Image (cartoon, rainbow, N blue to C red; front, side, top):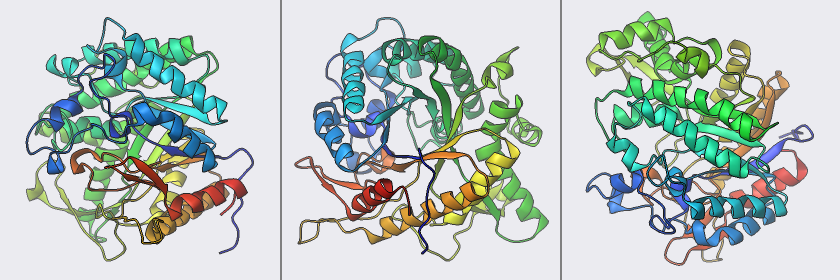
Length: 445
């Protein structure tokens, strides 16, 4: 492969999420989150795994920053645990929680690593879920208050803020499919999605006020849809998947309206967004960048008997990860070019891209993960191709810095470029980490 040079200033980073790595779920005044409750519910998480101790990052953050520095990372995207800051969701602030992130931010800056803060990566305080969760409009207001508290504390040093991570997961996967906390099936997912977007819109001016000059964005997960055949039915089904997964969030953020075809479809399912006056203008508040999480595409076949959006997923021949997700880097290129052409969000960051494989420590003490290395290399080439086509991509955050608690999969799936021995908490950079360090150092593939 010819060397692919990235532009000066391109950010090379990695990403994590608070519940997946921190542990210490009952220490220093942290409140219960919906994922603590979900993990404690039998049958919800594989092997009965929980978020404690995870990677014990709460105690080992200094070593983890040293590891990032050794890997030559320019930036680190991490999330803040809402229950650490406001154990009851609103009201009394927990100083110890703010102190932890204060130390983390200072440590990153001392190491020359730019912090990208995600305010919500799914660990809603359980007390707010008990009051109705994201289907309850009050949760959006509570989030805006939480965003204000955090931005006031960290906003003098943090210049990059992400309000929400993957609201599709926090709404559809959590209140309709039920695979993520709080685990509700066939619930008011459309209301949850609307209030998540409203929470984002309310938080943007709060962050700007507390952190003047900061860049504020949101991270969406995308599922580019291809029809299983050229039939009109399959093409229409792929369009529905695009509406269900992608346009439902993009359109209100960048066009100030929900897609009409999906409003009609949801109305048939007795699910309509509870829009109040001014909501859509609030949601469409101008932001500085869009975070893109991409793992795989969807190949869609029309199936009126499937319920919900009325389609099923095909599994084409090809290469698959341990998550049984197809490896399809060209769909990332197409996605980036489409976002730029159709929505013009301005600067883009890949805020997550990576792959799970069943890694093991080799007899030589290393962790050799050629499949992951090849996955990252091919997706970086897709990013470069999109940039050559004019897409303003500003950085790439590999998912994840280290193996961690993979939600309902527990500790059975390893996404890290750093191996974690959970029994000893030893960290071992995998071959993919060494590859990524070389790419970041050269700013080239």
